[in-house]
Image (cartoon, rainbow, N blue to C red; front, side, top):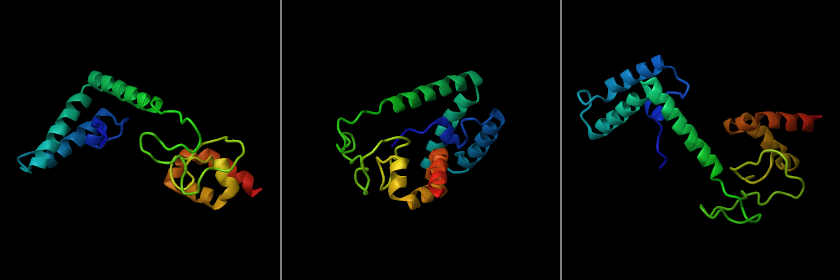
Length: 160
């Protein structure tokens, strides 16, 4: 299980201002306080809430914490390995780099590559040549937000 951030514990956005964090902390403390709910789960939750509040209420400590989060995020993105050959299984998960559709058709690999679903390992351009309906579905689906600009270009060109 991935460790949660203090922002996730308090259920606030990373960009939330101090007033919002303060109000949320107060509401969560009222809900999980041991006088209100004496259960062990509530006590553990209250400890998490107070730890997060202690860091996020102080601007200097919050700034340092944000830097630590950024370093963690950057390190995770650089930890990705390079596959030795096409079609080789992921050495960590044992999962094939391709989805149920199999390896992508030949041709130039340009654009964003999907890392989920039946077209895992395919570029949006390759998918568009095989299954335009999938691109239209992806454009409407929340998972497609990341690819919005490229999807609009591909579907716009395909419609002409």
